[in-house]
Length: 426
Ligand SMILES: [Fe+2]
Ligand SMILES: [Fe+2]
Image (cartoon, rainbow, N blue to C red; front, top):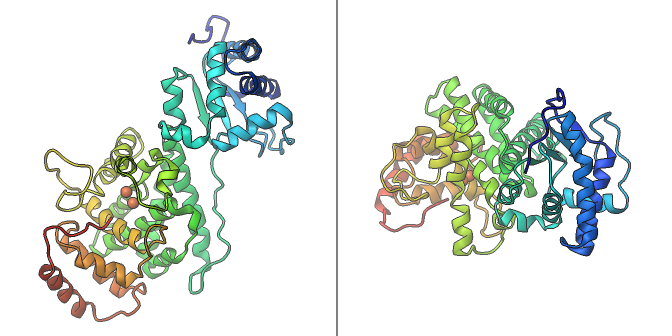
């Protein structure tokens, strides 16, 4: 792929929106390829038309944006008229892939345009099974193309606060889910993480936890079933903050812990959605895909200049367990980060109390009971005791017995029921 001609005068750096002509040219290439196949002269002519339309624009500017979503025209904010004909088909395909805009930074050949429209014509799950759009674009040598997803709505709507939950939390919940959703989308596209938004959210949640723990724990009772992954990350953050505070962490450390907890599962962006949402038992291959998420997340976070190192460590270690017998499998022991151990406890509790299609939901007391009865090794024992005490003091457990009376028998029971090969909670 040749780069744009840089000898014809200064070019603008910001990607300018191309206007409707380029959208129509791409739409025609998309339709012809679909109807006639990629090698047909009519398809190649349309693809060449797109390449020819693009070339002069790239001499004027470094990047050209082709906006495909129909939600708003970025130039003036007005709603774009409903797409028709070939453009409607292209827009539909883009929406299926959650693409709002394609940014092109180098000249394309007709064959490369064909490769792009072929990719847009594939089903999203097919593309995700091959590693997602950025990875497939790279495999095909289309490294000068970036498919952008516009920022999600600032708030994910939740109809009303559940009984007993502070109404102001509903707004916090919606905003938080929006930030987590955006982070996951950025990771899925291989783009630089907007760490400032996640950092602000983590700091706000940590500050709220310090000011009114009981109120913030109310976030755990808000459930929206189709947002599991984002909701899980938010809940893990709240629980990790509660445990961190019970352990006496100061405000800066709580901020760092909160950010790491929000991002702990960002590696799931590389797991196909149909695997993440599969209701039945996972195959070995599917399980292996899921178990890659700590490594994928850690690599991604370690490459983000704005994200402090503990976040990558927590992403890597949160399923390892205190005994390091979880996953990923290690060749030699690691030095475990305390935030990872905290996140591991919060993560397990959140998973047990969530409504998942493949197993019954446990109540807070039952979930804690399962964790206390888990054979020693998975959880750091002192942290687990502090977690149990924190929960017993909160309103989350059905009864709030004297924590000092509850904690010691649980620990003893855990010793008595210790078995070498018990199930791990994850
Ligand atoms: Fe995880
Ligand atoms: Fe998790």
